[in-house]
Every structure is written in C-alpha cells, then in structure tokens.
Image 1 (cartoon, helix red, strand yellow):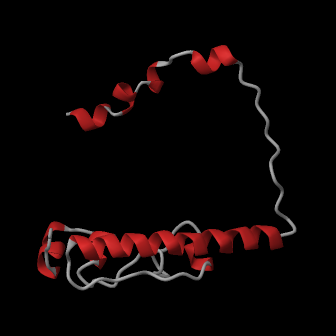
Image 2 (cartoon, helix red, strand yellow):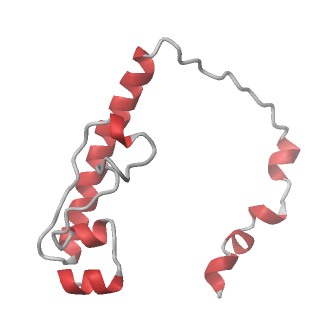
Image 3 (cartoon, rainbow, N blue to C red):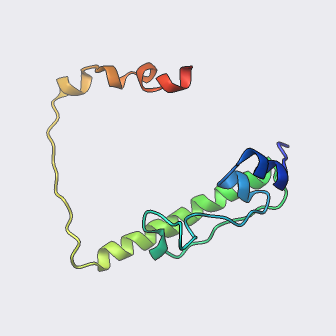
Length: 117
C-alpha cells in the first residue's frame, strides 16, 4: 500500500525515510561532507528498505526510534566523560497567573497560520 519506486522518488525529490524505503542509501547524518549537529562523532546505523511501500517506511521509522535511544545513550556517555562540561542551573519561578494568561502566540490557531492557506 502506498508504493512508489526509485524513479518516482528521484522525480519528486523525496528524501529521508521516503527515499530510503526504495533502497536509496543516502543519509546526511552519515555523510562526512554533509553531516550536521555533531553526528560525525556518533556511531549509529541508518536503515534501508526495498519495496517502497508504507510497511517499509513504518519499519524504517521504528528502527530509527530504537536507534535514537542508542544515540542518546552515546551523548549521555560523552557528556558524563567530559570534565569541561558544566551544567547550567537555571531556575525560573513562574507565577500561576502567568501560566494561565493567554498570549497571542499560545493559541493553536495562531501558531499554525502557515498551514491554513
């Protein structure tokens, strides 16, 4: 269900899970020249499908969620091993009236304006 192929993927410019489910082995997090957000320093796997269907996309996403736990654990270990890392002890006191106060940017309708049109 929801199947497409390599050619349609290229034609539509799909990326991420949408491209990996048809067998395209491209993940910017693993590319040494295009990586971002310090993924270069982490060890993790990227998952590839073959059928281009919704089940392949589901499996890739489920595997990536479990791999995310691996990534988080690596980051925690690196932080704990870094003697120069300092935790910020920010504490804020928020009064109840400030929490209950409605602002224009707190209404869902105002936040999603770009999806409406």
